[in-house]
Image (cartoon, rainbow, N blue to C red; front, side, top):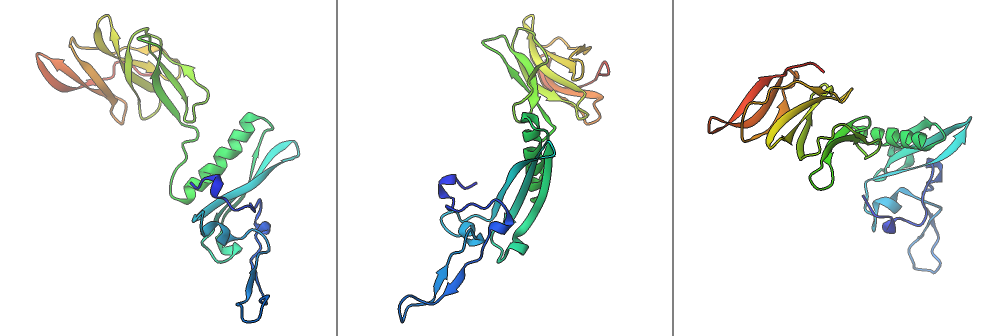
Length: 235
């Protein structure tokens, strides 16, 4: 993304703001015709110093008690406004922080889709956090919002992973001096039964795609090995 210090001075809010330059007679005989700037134009962004390919712009307003975002995505390499217009859409949200996040995320999702990508909106991230050795598992939105504490074992926890259906998460925790794999329900946070073999090392848990098995690495009978175990309880 291009930094704002490189932006042209005239920034559009809607497609009608774009005005193509015109040609005028030279001021002195023998000079080439002059280019007259009539307002913001596509080449302002595709040329130096921005040298960009795409431009997002728009504006917000309040309409019928709702927040309205009018968002646009333009390919500024195109020769005219009609061919440059890729996204031209209204987004509606409530008049609060949640409404502002909603319209921004929906606009961003449409932009990503334009380039063959999928938005992370609505997804969650599981991570481990805690001072010193008192670590706990947390979950939040992909943008760091709505953090929620899921576990608190008051010991070192690591390697949280989530089942494909999003119903369970597993992690490795140091329990009473030995590493163990713990499985919890995402919905309730409740610990689910899981058999941990006696081993000096148990780590890197991972659910199979169907969620019926857990794969992990362990040291068994003096050998390092990979193991597969049936999950002992449903979420």
